[in-house]
Length: 219
Image 1 (spheres, rainbow, N blue to C red):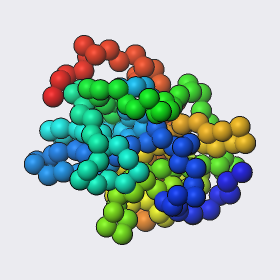
Image 2 (image 1 turned 120 degrees about the vertical axis):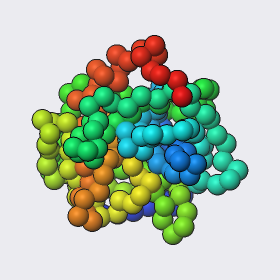
Image 3 (image 1 turned 90 degrees about the horizontal axis):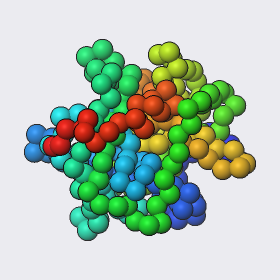
């Protein structure tokens, strides 16, 4: 069992096979390339934070543990931001987007499932994986934040997490037990240096899986 503490790990001794559903994405906005994190739920479908792709000109998924110029890439051709996302009111409420890829992900990729019913508390053991920039590099990095509270009509969790950095946005939050881990949230925003807001995916389950391609405008 993983203990609850602010640990960070990006070395080879962590079992990264458990997290091969997690990828870095490049987002071009205003001609500038930004990076965020995403998680796969199907062979051509990933989830990320709405603010990560808001006003994007292009979205590209990169394969590999570390982000380099030689990283293999898969282009996205459709993406949709949750219609309830409104950064003028809140940076983290409904901060979720679905991205559709032009090609299948590698055959070894694990696709995460999302429960319709998800509750966590201070006893929950949580893990977060993200590609935020650390020491000048974007490497897949593991941390284990701790639950603090639930808000916005159960649509968000707040976690204690002093290790979050830019680029972790859109990354998955897993609840881990002795029987394995399950996807519960998407990393949204940092507040006060040690608190992060997480999108509770169970509250968006129906929106994610009832989307039809005809509803998604091509970019």
